[in-house]
Image (cartoon, rainbow, N blue to C red; front, side, top):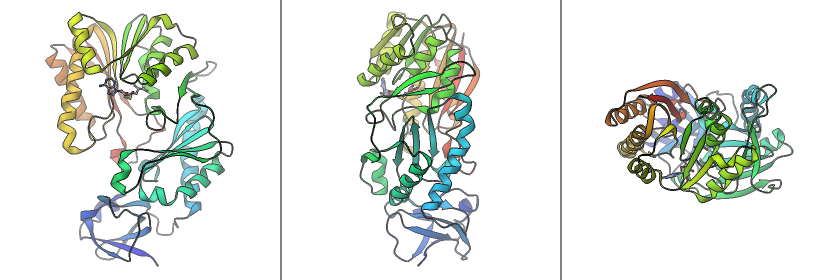
Length: 402
Ligand code: SAH
């Protein structure tokens, strides 16, 4: 029997615009007794069919949409279709850049709410964050086995947000055998030139193992680094630093709190046959270290600021702005005249406009003239559904300070 979720009058508008979420306060009544992850039809108060999705009894997002096509059945074949479409859309990028690491599926933006899938060479890593994703885990694995018959399918659903959906954290092999970690991926190859090699630990690394979304921005960063002194803050496994060295940097300092990330950062330098004597690794709190550098009168030509998400909820947005302003102001104070700041925010709640304002305020407080040279975004394998602007989470600016 079809389970039907009827919306309060007027609350059908966002679904008519193909936004994939139904909030609990938009629900009038539920016909039937859906369990977590069950497929439901969503209808307007007048009874018009709007969408087919899955039910999340414990979440404020009570239902999320699988399909806006009334004839589309949600079954194993549906997941194979969606993931095939996702793979096809990435193929030109994979071919052009010789990618062996890429995001296969960007959740809502690829029509699969709560399903994030990253490919790292022979390992496909899934992060299943919604009740619907959880319900269809087997179908997702079956589809991935079809698309990647030789790969290991590994799950990294060990994230706290699963609690909002009433799900426990999970991690482990879903199919095949996990090769020894870390594994090597390659990106940004150009015709005739090999790409950059990067070590990824899918078992213990952050998120699914690596920050694939910064791929284009790493390449862009390299072009500002020739003969420069580069400070790479929140370096994780040091890949902005690797690109800086490739771009001819005189010196690179990678700063991160995580010892294991910095250990991989060092290996990434040697893996790419770059000069380790030009690189330093500082295990430190960026907020404190930037102040220490300021006291010491240190100066840099290029600074990268790629902090973790500062705002998880709207309530945290003000605090996040203060955090962004603080590190950006410190960075401006540490830049030589004509120096370049590559600054990022991966907080989805922080709009591009707001981020730009915060960076502008930071320049003002540091007493520097500054110009935006480039606006940066997440790489194309992290697409943004046009009906789902929340999918645009990574914003960056290349700013020159005088
Ligand atoms: N720039 C990286 C990704 C950065 S992710 C890349 O391109 O791959 C954010 C990183 O910030 C994580 O590695 C985390 O360990 C580190 N981190 C978080 N808070 C920090 C702090 N206060 N000081 C130093 N590092 C921090």
